[in-house]
Image (cartoon, rainbow, N blue to C red):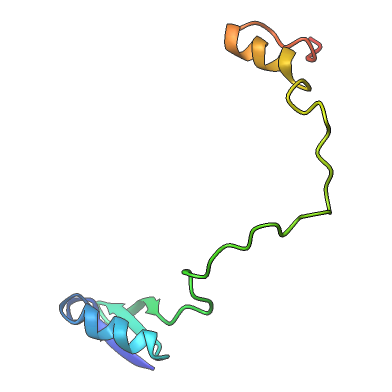
Length: 86
């Protein structure tokens, strides 16, 4: 595990990121005290999202577009929601 001071980290950030991507762990210190750790990601962020993960696990009601009409109109016109009791 390599330790570098913050000034060297700023100067050599590209090299340090390459090392971290290759698996190295780098400690960044300020005034001799460790303050941050640069390390590789456990899982790449660029994996495509999986569509349909919940397919068949939930049911969408036929009248979904009508379920909250009163609440939406209340919010739109700035009046109290008919569902809320005071």
